[in-house]
Length: 271
Length: 309
Image 1 (cartoon, rainbow over the protein chains, first blue to last red):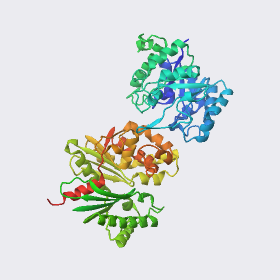
Image 2 (image 1 turned 90 degrees about the vertical axis):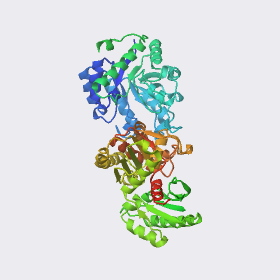
Image 3 (image 1 turned 135 degrees about the vertical axis):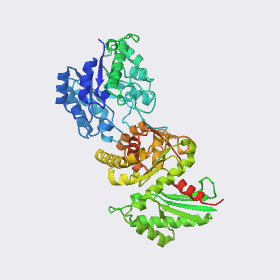
Image 4 (image 1 turned 90 degrees about the horizontal axis):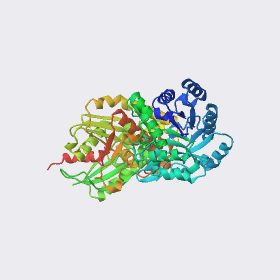
């Protein structure tokens, strides 16, 4: 069976979390990753449960609020945020919680992070997939903003997320990172980047990351995790343009996972 | 003749010695400065503190001596927002005059905007067409727009990086509620004047001056100051937008680790970024260029223009 291709609710921003459910269901995504952000609906598992049942689309992963812009979401203490993410995932039937490594100023959290994540994973079936980040580039110098490291290969995590916009910013070879993570790679944030210092989250295929090769490799290897479309459609002028990008990304993922890079996709034919 | 220019700014007090003749470039032969941050030496009643006045007086004294040593025959002395906006600004000016004999001229915000505009116009020349010039000082934000050497509109609002930091960003790292309040205040203040600027017309070239803009451009990837004034440096709004939350999350000490950010300016850089982002958004600017000349050069240029041939 081919891996699930799901939609991050971040991909429809600035539209609401609720809009993501409707769009994902209609465009034929296999599920949703809920990015917990300022939108109160994204923070409320009961509300998410009702949306899930109303639109009939599975919630397959939860992205914990550990971004710069979600520092105060679900409180400001890091561990309780992860506990709430785990509880939400359990309630909603999501298999995975995506977590970023701590920021460098969260010193206590960072010191216990690897062991703490491991201990939490012992008590649940939910997988905590720690995501690769990137050094912040200020002028020509790199600023290590994450601890223990932005590169999740350097620490002993049971499960990891590979984000192809982040590999673009960090200048990492995504295929090599996937190979190094091997079985620990359970979750992919599919996006593209042009190699600039900006975290671009482009539609896959529009940048320089080896998106197609990675997907083909995952397809061949029997990868049973999720491929989450996490692109920025913030600059889309309207719903129509946003949906066109979301369709294109979904078709791209399905085509390459199936090892048919030249195939016309059913979703494209329908549209 | 040798001209001395004493600039009492909100972040630095600066003496420049210039060889002045009609048509000369406003480039200093010597510079002597102190980062005394007058905008931060202000008490709860918006008064410059006793310590602030005393250190200003002592710097003015030492500047006079340096000027004499360099053979300066004429001194121009001016002050900007820190003294202009201080509740006891008049008293400070009197005290400086009584104790040093130096009569500081207080530039209005519009003068600051106008003279900065002149310097930028001379740097780029007429080929730049209609210019929009932005400058974030310690005490105020200056905005000027126009097609000539004198701008068609020149505006100053009290949104300096030091002032905004002192008024809103009291914790370190800044509490998100403080950042939000600073952002809201900044946007409301700029929005109130934006119409006066944008109605003049679309700029052909957008230029920013000031240390704040230089630091922001630098962290976003522009060339360091060591590469000199003739390298083109830009700041893109998207890059700035990506940096604001990062700067907000970092402590002042961490910001000082960024290349292009001095320890003295690191505390204000977040406020500067908030003001810069708001100005770009509300004036519809996608990208700007950093110019090396600003207010001081404008003051000197205007003076040189009045020297007979």
